[in-house]
Length: 230
Image (cartoon, rainbow, N blue to C red):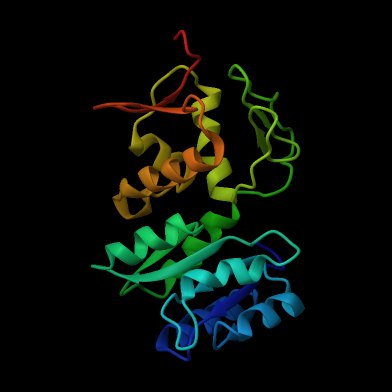
């Protein structure tokens, strides 16, 4: 996480006062945008590697901020805070492209742990990449971090790219939600399996179109990627 740039989009809440100094203490570069309107300007100048985004902003719908940040470059991974009972916020944030969430109240250590985990999902090539997995038509290119299907190249967030990886590598084996959580979120995303369902649902909208589902639900067990005959 050397030289990581962190953008905190928050309206002067105690949360920003906690996350920004802790990030700087750990040697990260960190700046704060105090509104949704300010966030794109800050992002354009600062070019963050990751964003901590408060979706309850005073001027705009916080769930629309990722679209504002994309601009001419890829949206960096986004981590958003949510109340322990804020299931609706968690669902909306993950559906709109969020990569992880911070369930409040949280300790000083947890924000940095979440950021480290999300940033370990690389958007670029990995050293000593394994051969490209293939399952019928879908292909996954480990060098370019792209998943191609039916000649299409959908735009995927780092988390959306990571979820199919273990399924393609172990096809046609069924993986449980817990196994996928362990692979992508490492420490189980607080034990909430609903995040896997949300990301799979988002992937299906991006990858399947009107064709056969790429990721199949095996009821009572989990998910698998299989050819039609399997």
